[in-house]
Image (cartoon, rainbow, N blue to C red):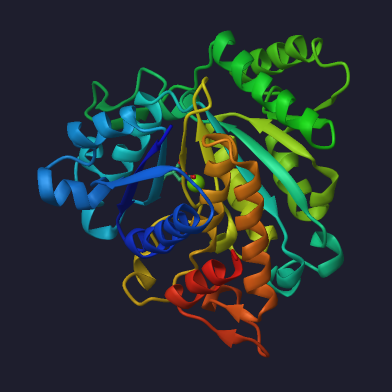
Length: 358
Ligand code: IPM
Ligand code: MG
């Protein structure tokens, strides 16, 4: 059956990286029997400019009907003064929430070819391979009440609510355990149970679910310590499971361990494994439109799509190997550049991966 893929390029560098990822999908379709149908639509600031909304109803409908969504990036300074619900980021958060994409997988893997690109010493990061499982549709990002208001003296205050139900914790814990089981069977749950009730519940429920996974070694860590351990000795981690806000922060740290956030893909999955795939790096308005952005995070997101939504493990591996081969050939975009290598444009990097697919 033909799988339907919706491509949402969005803003900033989004269109450039999605163009390369789309070329990869088309090459797989042409030469490797991938049965897909691609469609494109608007999201984020681009959608706001065209329709007045960062997530038009038409885009949401198409996303609901798709087997997988490839998402570029959203956001830019020109939209930062808009009311929150009209900002590009709201389009992304609404998509995650409306599609029930509660499980966010953010792998951080160091390609041996890029060991020099990390700001950490080589021996600290060499061979790094960790997976962050971030809860994506709950916690303080979505908790009610939330508001900005004034007190009786006219002084401003603002409130957000970090709320998790046991059902939400249980289902993300299961994803964490299942993934750890397929990796090195070690799961570290990150919380702030020494201070927050919501984290104590998190810890209790993760322990309960853990009873069903005696083969997975479970540990717990406070988030402040986890941030420190990630830069001190990142290879102690195999799989991390954590809430929405902590996962947002820790995944940026993990990204930088690999040298460039320009290399990191992600998947956001619902209960049925349907998903949205996006690079972790965001819209990078400062380099947009120059043909210099690294397309590999988005191309690796296509690999995750092939694995998790299209059930083509074989093609996922083919894409991942092609990325390694393109790096072996010495091609580097600016973000992962070192002296002896050849500077590649976005299109040259994408083209090299496509050549290596053969
Ligand atoms: C991410 C981003 C988003 C988030 C923003 C753009 C809303 O930082 O995907 O990590 O905070 O989740
Ligand atoms: Mg983030």
